[in-house]
Length: 175
Length: 184
Image (cartoon, rainbow over all chains, first blue to last red; front, top):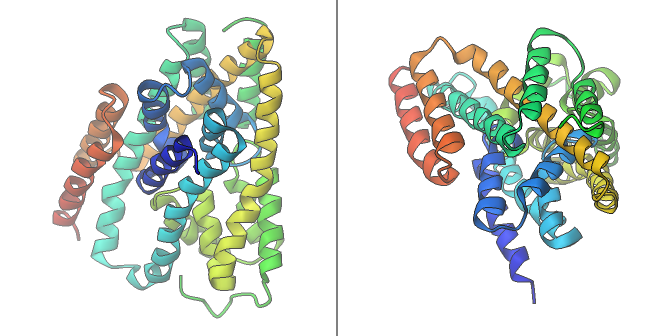
């Protein structure tokens, strides 16, 4: 008997896999909506911690999905969530890759790319906004977010230094 | 993707697995630059231009971009087998490492400095996501209808917190219709 929570996790991420235009960062508001606001599987603080870990750990940022699965149902939850997140989009990619080059200059391909570009931007901007808000209404957190944003847009600092600076400020009690 | 005549021979399933395994574990703060280095510079499986084309397809399709990239590269050299072993190699070590870190974090969850550090990282990483969105907005910011679509998606999902499926079901066909009418 498969635990119902695993089935539910799988269904949630099977759908999100095909909606994640812009990758894992694009579906953070939806993950938050489902696991924190609707299901109550994770608290706001849990979610924020798992996001922090997924960004600070080596590897792609889609690891947030397996961390959410882990919080909900342990290692099995992590593997189920990650598999559900990767398999549908990978199958789609496999078949589209076969056809894509033949339609290099086709008007339909260009129209699809132009249509999806602003959708992706809107999704990732929404993620940034929702993530900023999960820090609570605390101005020190907003200050770190703002300073990181400015540093990224105006300097060539490696993002890892900015995460380390955030970690150090948090550890000494700034946020 | 069609196989170009320059495709290196002898990229075995084992080599795909090992190559992407290396990429997965070296990717601190973003995996894509390491994938480019491995594929183009170190192992020379792809030219710069091939990499850019594959990357643009991987980014445009739904799903984790780097996993899509591994699927496309794996498929190119080893068909269905390659399309499985490349993403598997990519995700194996990061998956193990992150779960070990999560278990360790749970041990120290009561330590205030650890909780604070997590809050600090989350705040900084939110800035990373915002910066990514603004950079991606650069090429579309002068085109009014694309700005409009981006704003609608942001407002519906970020501000109104509407479910993503409904929002995309309404907005994607609209965006496609506008893009199609303005083609050429």
